[in-house]
Length: 474
Image 1 (cartoon, rainbow, N blue to C red):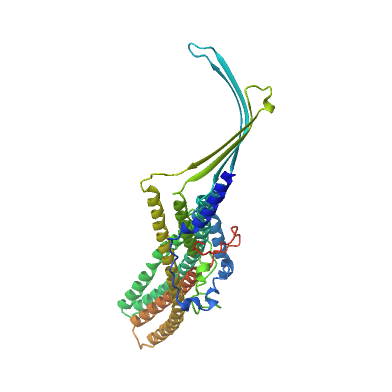
Image 2 (cartoon, one colour):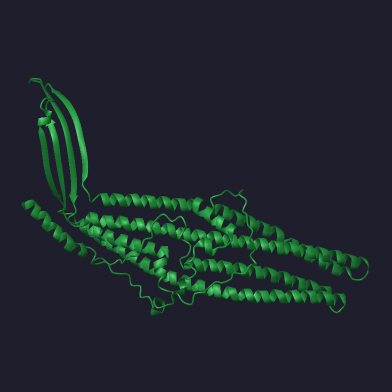
């Protein structure tokens, strides 16, 4: 009876000491401005779209799906999630008794010098139960730590998924932009080739000097020199996509999309909401690591106090099979072990755990700052990229008119052939510049989608969404 009273009293003390274990853990000081707290919720409009709806190109969607299924980093992240899940199961099972069994038989013969020979037989059939009573919450803190580490691995996997989707889309848009640029250069090269033929005929016919003919050849050669570098860049971009998809470089990258198509019906966020903290998996992963660090503080605190372990053994034991079933055996033991003089080791571990918690807290606060900074940058970049596209389009149209006008004036003798070449050069540069601007528009939208936390909610999501919880101990 007294034994039960001791356990009950210790349990009550453990409950009261559970909060004091982490009383020195300071809550994160986020201090989010009211402008973000009260921001319009339309900042999540884009991120609410699943990636297979956000990226309408069927070829790109197939690439993303292949990447999520075969990318080696993605597979490694899934393995880490499974490992963390199993470790969490272990930490939960530590709270429960461990039950074992024993069936044994032995026959011992002793023939010592100067004594009589003796024979000793023993037969055992026993059931053992070992249970550590979690007086100070050590095992419960370990369970919380395991849970937080498991949820952090889940969020890490989601963050990696979000990043891979962004990387595939960005690589695809860069590749198709290079394809378009190569087409522009090849078409221009054909025009340059025709210009060389015309200049040669006019030179041989005595209508122009050799200088005009040489100028046409220089422009043709300078344009042709652009092709090998573009083809190399395309090969590199294809290898990047192949690596992301878990393929070797000899895998042929298909594409049926042109980068000069304009994105329509994209709703630009008018504000950055604090809801980002609930959506971004990397923020939630940092929060779970903070909770894991807090649980480690609780474990270090509880480790300073004695541990109570109870062993129960019951069964049958006899020195002969005869009467074995009528030979009950029982054994009960309790051990209360704890440090007496550790010369400050336990206290040092506790203080080290608090310092580790402070490190995790600062990292979480830094992550929150980075999220709002990244999102503000992404919103600004997307808005400006759309403005640049319109300006570059106007430049291309003006360059085209200038090129046609210079041709007409050259034929009428109003301008020199050098002016025609200069106009053609400006038109080529304007075409390439517009293609790059459209590429940058797509890349900025991809970045905006990522920073807002879009893309991790995959159609084959198998792990339930982990809701963020407060880090303050109760």
